[in-house]
Image (tube, rainbow, N blue to C red; front, side, top):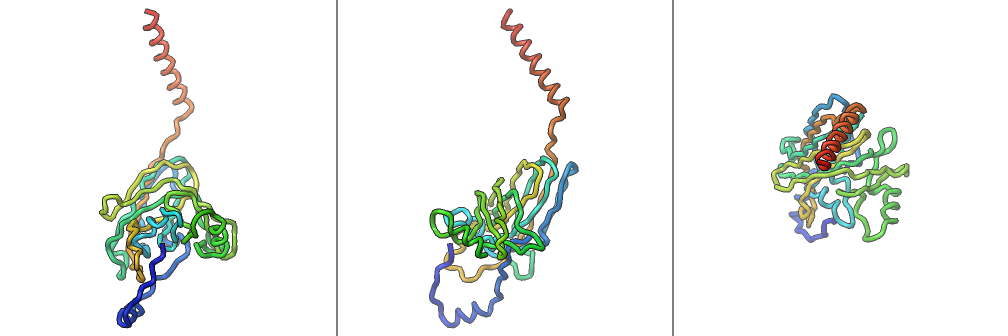
Amino acid sequence: MYPRICNFSATALIVICALPAIAEAHISYTNRDFGSFGSTGGSVTISNQTVSSNFGWADGLDADFGDSHRLRAFRFTLTEATSITFTAEANPTATLTSVGGLLPGFSIFSGLAHLTPLQPDHDFAAATQAYLASLPGVTKEGAFRSMNDWKVTNDSGDPLSVFTYMGSAFDADLDGRASGSFTLGPGDYSIFIGGVNYVDQIDALIYPTYGLKATLSVATAPVPEPETYAMLLAGLGLVGFAVRRRTVR
């Protein structure tokens, strides 16, 4: 939902114009790459990050989608089937201009946005807008979807980047923290973090910068070896034999 246009006094307008503008970044993973994880697992925390609203994740739940500019994208790579735990937290000391109070939500997607040297993806690229216009239903505010697959591309019109929804978590108890555990296969993943305060967008002309930090903890989910399967089948066979003997008696 876009904010409604309201009337303000000249004094209010002067105050608004005097405030610093919030940069609108396209989808980027700069300083937000957790790296690659394999059999050894690991844990990485990325702090000193920001998100430019407290409603971006929630806005991606409705029929007109949401604007990905209101979230921050992180990435990681898994080299094998793995169990991960991801935590997003409000971090009021992230920057000198950040404010406290972020109520975080995040979604994990298989897939990445276009990377350098290609141009970055964003909701208002002509090719993205053409794709969104082809979808049924109401006019879309952006491309982002919190709990569904979604697509976006760049100003060069490169093939659409596809984000396949894998899971999500949000700050249900309003303590500034969202955490969830997921089992994922090998591949490249994106995590989008935003705010869950949907009503925060109403009549908002200024979007404060909210500080956040994120932690990715990885522990491998081992796949049973062939001999393990053999032992399991042998055990099941013995159980079946014992049951049959008891039935005959």
